[in-house]
Image 1 (tube, rainbow over the protein chains, first blue to last red):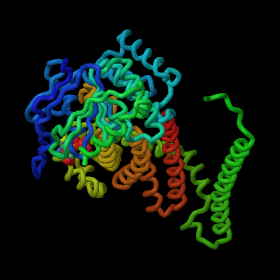
Image 2: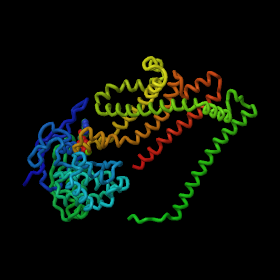
Image 3: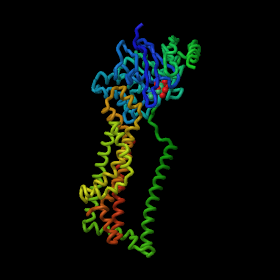
Image 4: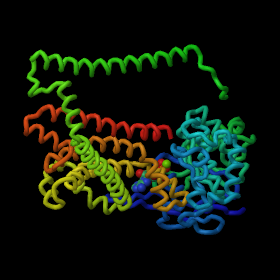
Length: 251
Length: 267
Ligand SMILES: Nc1ncnc2c1ncn2[C@@H]1O[C@H](COP(=O)(O)OP(=O)(O)O)[C@@H](O)[C@H]1O
Ligand SMILES: [Mg+2]
């Protein structure tokens, strides 16, 4: 089994004026290449902290995170981060939003990168909106644009921090399917944070359940449902059983 | 999903109603000014109010013509306009640059915070005598006064706009490896554009306050000087004429900012 992304004895403390906040305590687990892993845990337990550490935006207090056997660095280009809200820049067109990352890395004149961006837009039905402004798009489309903005930089690991929680339920199921399809067809490894158990179950190959703060891994579950999309996976006969088991572990 | 739609009947009706409403508003606006001037003129003509103290539209008009013919009017207008526009531009540019510096360095921001608050609440006119001592009287002093009045509010408003930018957006930029300069130019500045337009609008008014105040303090030319001169000579017609011209100039300058605002909104 290849350990694509590995957490080893990861601990993290926030320093504040009043006290030290122990956010993560000795976290250990790994994710295989091209797998979809979800982290669930009570709110405030340290999920976002884990992603920030993984993205290299914070440095571990102790322990380490390895990606393909190498320690994660600050500004690691192997990693793409997708936030809770899409954070599209209203003053930029969809196309300009998508190539933002390329601009920042001075690759916006790179023909290959640009044609890849073009290709992604076409493939995921956004090409006709290329020159539109974000506010002209629906919530689901905006989230797709945000994902493509991340994919354009061709990361091998995608981090998603509750990317659907700002959407209404109907849109959410649809966007879940869309995002899942995109991530699978681009063959990315993904680490999703959510507090929605069904969402985690319908998308993941592996679920990591965290305890309340300081978070440590309480339980790990491998999942293998019938069905090729999250929506179909929700109909698997074992879905309810898994749901209950996770729910019991969370409370 | 997006066929070219012809305006439906209901929509056409709605547009028509909007247009009608607009015409009604314009109509009443004209009525208000004509009514006001007419009443003023009648009261002055019938002797209900003393035109010596209250002037009258016709006397103001004549006064403007007279000043215009002697050539001094344009000289005064030009002086004030020059001071105001220069003060406005200087205050806006320097103010934004200082706000950027304060955004850039959190330490500098914390150091300067109390001083900004004091400067903001200080009535700038109190500095008048010092300004005259330092830069001399006349145009220079007026421009300095103008800049002083506009710059503090520019700094405070723009700094607020800069630091209130969504921290997740900054994090997003960082996660895509943006450096600080890129965060400034690709996120912070464009994000603050609407606030910048508000500052411009405020500064149009403030810069005129600065100019007139500066000219009251010490000057040999300008509309503020003219108002001062008129009141000392008890020539209220000149005072009123200057105020009317001031209204027109300030309104015009404000009008120049409006299309800029519309353009920002559309983007
Ligand atoms: N910048 C910070 N400084 C201090 N404490 C923080 C900071 N960010 C988060 N925390 C604290 O760390 C804990 C975990 O936060 P977070 O990772 O955001 O939780 P989650 O994403 O699971 O809801 C919370 O108790 C939160 O208050
Ligand atoms: Mg969170």
